[in-house]
Length: 174
Length: 399
Image (cartoon, rainbow over all chains, first blue to last red; front, side, top):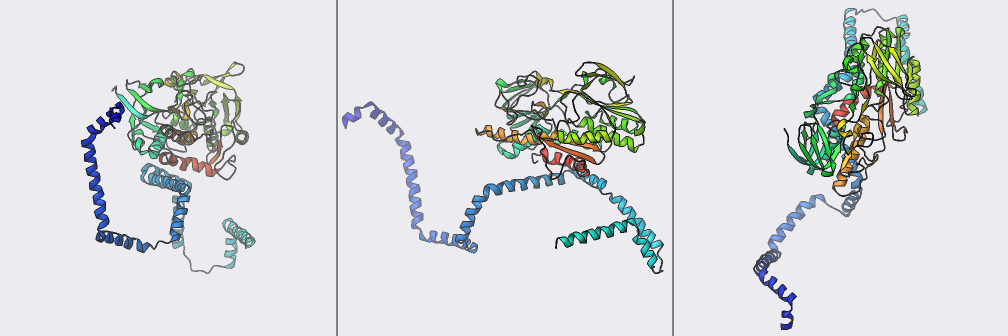
């Protein structure tokens, strides 16, 4: 033993150990306190009982079954794909939110829509039609000749032809 | 005021590419908040694809501009100065105002420079004497003024032999002008000439075939491999040089739409980042600089062998952002850019051919129909949808 202590390496280690003794003591005490706390908790059956009962009560409404665990495993498997879709959805939602909050873009979109669909022109036609209908309303019955003349109008002709085509196509897909 | 900045990522240029890349970096990595510095002297941001329609009287110029400050992504900083010198060996750049920026990673997205001076007499007469150009916010409205008040004669539309931003734009305005001349009843008295430095109407055959038909239908005279070299506004004469024979010839005009020559910005051209032609020298697929691995390039200032368009930038931005983050995390650079670019070729009011292709000039079309046909739906998309997608999707790093 004495021979061993005379060894330089052993003496160096011993010196380090002695130097660090106060810190080691402190660490040991702290560790001892924590171990004691865990032991106390484990012995405190009343607290453990209350804790587990509360957890079980909270988990009970979920009625987790082995199927749930299987589903969870499947969900985990699908996560890489799902995350891709979620990212796309998040990007889309962020884009829509950005457009809605961007006054200039909203004004541009509305103006663009009005250019494509001439709403004002359509409203003017409707308004004029209503006014003229009210003004020129007559009580005379609509004759067959008048109906025939109406049927010859290009708009009605196109409409009838469109309905014919639609019925033809629909019957093929029956 | 001269300052010293120390940042993780410096982005030179706050145009389409710069802002889009900054937004993507900040969306993907929250740790970069406050660490991304955009450097750009301009306080205005322009959506330039709209200028074709502005020049054709189909859109308002004010819809093409926004305050730069409103577009800087949340979490990024903006240095409103112009870069003068790159010192990539020291991960440093200097601005004209005297500031020094030290960076860990650099993205160069400074766009192209328009060489107005390269055409003799152009600067003196642009915006007047029937001389106009869609390539500047200041002059784009003069194009519409010229088209609107044209009463017949010769209308010339030029395209230089250099690369230009949106290679289709020089002919788009011509098709709109033709349409308007027909509507206003002056087409019969008008000779339209397309004078281009390029050898053909379009580089991709599928779309070139359609455009050839449009040229024929509209009775437009074409002159290829000719470069506008001089313009005399007062005398209304334009001098061209044939690029194969060097012979010069002069044409009289009543209106002329000039697409000026373009090239790399001077501060890039003189820097160690540039290739022989002056463009930022990047790998065509990863967009990483070929010499300095912490430097990336995107957009019009790079030597990518594809058409310089906003649509190309839309595909380049995610590649730069992803590869830059991979480099930061010491992972391999997996994102690849395939040279995708797109040119919405307006062939008249309510008509558009949507050209989309890659490095190999193979069509790479988005929609499930033949996009080489002239379609109203595509025109509506360009005019009404794409500006909104740009401001709210692309610049936010979402699309």
